[in-house]
Length: 406
Image (cartoon, rainbow, N blue to C red; front, side, top):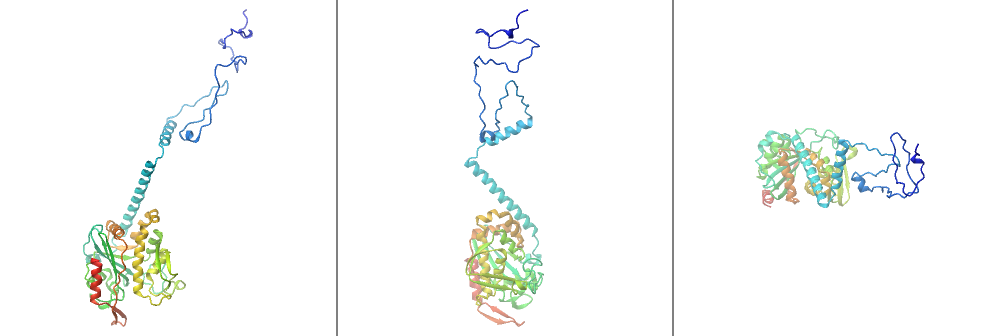
């Protein structure tokens, strides 16, 4: 019997391999330490972060004598790996970054626009048909100029700030219009004229009385008719400020910044009696919504007894200018959806969403309106025993001319 080849001693001409017959057991490790390997063994370096993001894995070297078994990739894993590689290979450049930023800004503005239109639609029909019938047709305030009547009544909300003021009137019927302001707006124009609430005027169907009584007796329709007759100006739109939602809107835009004198205000007896209290030192202040509302309503300033209703109307116009300035601030842009939702809810108006939006846009294009107030020339005692302010026809004519023609 021939010798087993495995028992033969190695010689110089022995090949560097061995042939096995079927049925023979393979050794765990067929190596020859005395023979130099014809190859070099390398190990894989750990992959970096960029390689890992591209989906590359650390290469595993199989153990000696052990075959590494790879799981066949599934369609889902293959798709995820290819998708991830495509995404990570698209490196962020400044142009692509600007494009992404532009898309985000457009989406943010579009969201705000949709919320504004939905909120405005919810407020549609809040002005009586009789009042709308008194209004003259208006145009697009981006290109043409309209006259808007702004009214603030003494109606109080049933809940929240001001709801517990002594003698509060919770119904719109019978309320007086304590704020009367004409706003000439559109086509790059923004001018306002405030009419003191105690101004004596002829009210159709009522006679001579304070001009703010027109709203009490006939609502916004009679108020529009009385003010048109008093000034000779045709009114295109009317806005009635909702005192309950006014602070919410101011807070939604991040408050307003306003410069004031020293203010010591206690409305309806102050906070202790269910009213409001406001103490401001002289200087520039950033006001919350409630502080802005108190300042807009303040007629009696215990720190300056010379202030009166005319001072209050001057501050109201300054507050409107401060709102306009705040709307242009970068901080308001990040709050834009909330401001867009609250803005229409602050107003009761005949204007629909697109017309109201053109009003806000026109106010930004028109700049800050100069403060203008009708100046009384004297006072008179009315039949009911109250005192009213008289304004000369020449003062009315001059103020109206400035409002219309600048």
